[in-house]
Image (cartoon, rainbow, N blue to C red; front, side, top):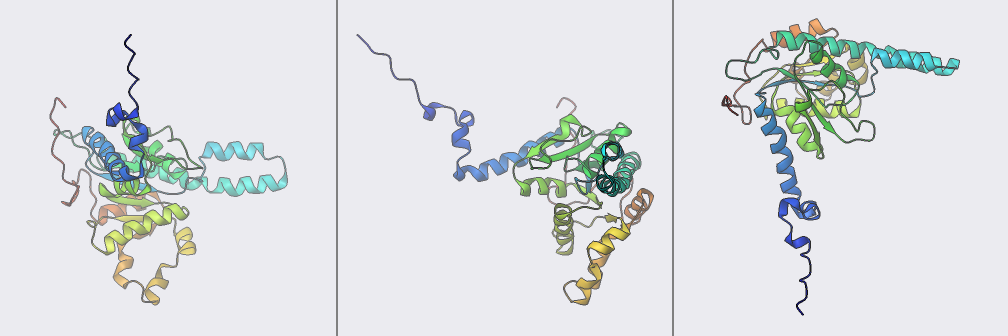
Length: 286
């Protein structure tokens, strides 16, 4: 009597179906490449050629969150902490207003005849300042991008990113690459270690000419002058005086737009020619 052959093992699975195989350490380079191409190709499908990137703290509350926390404060100590927290909501409102203004004046609302969009708001996709910027774009029915990553404090994307332009990354390096590679301008609101990391990476790319020049605007004069003594870098001989010209510090959305415009960003301005920045029009049937 013939016996049934044993069922095939994991080795018989197609490679793309074999999760255990794809997660081997030796295939990290392949996973890195796939993470790059997924976001790259979907953004191309949408015609996104350039972005205005907004960085800032995930801990800054929306006015609604600040009001709810104040209402829940049951002790004088809790009230004082809630008021301190609520005071930071001004930066949420300014980031939202800035993204709304930029989405209208920067051209993201206007899909060109060749189906290419420029100056689309892009964030890390989380809460706080990131949510505010995505929300500002949504206020004027403009698309916006969320490059999310799984973290203890922000596991899920905010509700205001365009669903088809909401991505999740495993690798910080790939997420940061996508934030930087299409950027026509960078807006940086008050934030912590992550915000500083992203800011100084962009400034380093500019300083070393590894990225094309673009406007970099920091929001919050009092905050940035207190948190980072930029002039001390010059005094200590660690950067050149000219390097402080890589960015400007402002307070309001209008000041931010004026700075970006004066430093080379205009409505419908295509990005500078640089590796990874050229984009061909999409076929009408794609």
